[in-house]
Image (cartoon, rainbow, N blue to C red; front, top):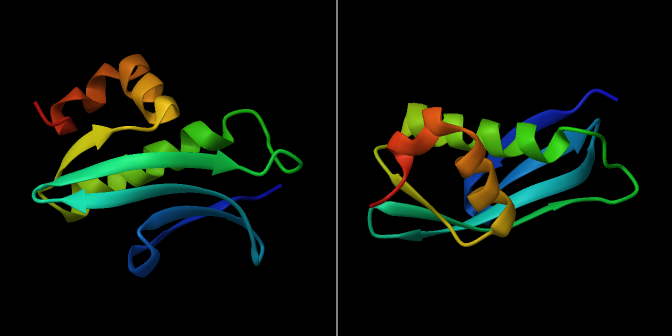
Amino acid sequence: MAVDYEHHADERRYVARNDSEQIGFAEYRLDDDTIVFTHTVIDEDKRQKGMASALVQFALDDVRSTTALRVAAECPYVTHWLGEHPDYQDLQSR
């Protein structure tokens, strides 16, 4: 299954798609100079190993390359992901 990742700024979410079907998302809210990731979901029936990780990495890479925002995580998955990837610690709000 080929998965594409997109930023839907108007919906405040990053989306994982297979063809035209949305199969997952990472929602966020903006809080001053911080993007707060609140919820990450991958459709259980479409889930593949590493899909959620790839979505979070895409989102954080996009934040890093297109904004000056800091990152905070309320979503347990994003919190865990950041803990496993020290090369993204520079993005986190203090």
